[in-house]
Image (cartoon, rainbow, N blue to C red; front, top):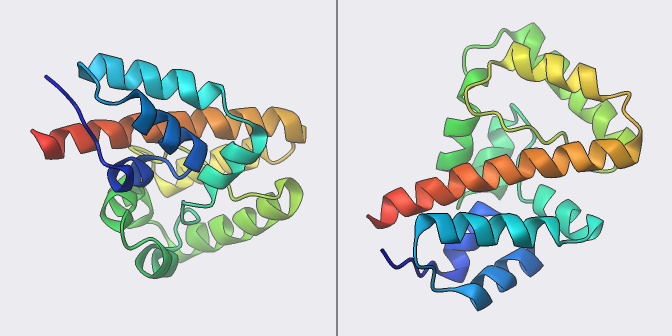
Amino acid sequence: MRVQPTKVALTRCCGASRWVDGMMAAAPFASADHLHATAERLWWALSDDDWREAFTHHPKIGDVDQLREKFAQTAAWSEGEQAGVNTASDATLQALADGNARYEARFGFIFIVCATGKSAAQMLALLHGRIDNPPPAELLIAAAEQRKITRIRLDKLLAEET
């Protein structure tokens, strides 16, 4: 299996431009394992600013309007990843919106969580559990969550190509 993703495809997986450039320079990939190992190595070699850039490529958890408007290229993936908000109560959605606003004001970036398989209530609990973290620790947690999202999206990309 030889994997040769495009720059556009890689950007759909992770919005950090230095990560995308590194992945393009390393391509083609001999296997899915090679792709994932390279993605992981490059991700953890990035700077805090690169991670923050990647975060800007995500809609806020539960913000369906933002999914449609700003993130048309990744909307289908994001909607599937955030499917847990589809059945949430209005109160839970409002609490997520309020929590997202507090989180962003505190840390300077949106709440990043690998939402796949999580309900809105679970994501809200995670947000509440992380809001008091020291900023440097929270940035590392958010980066680890972004890494999980990127891996899932790389798998989706591989599935589309086969």
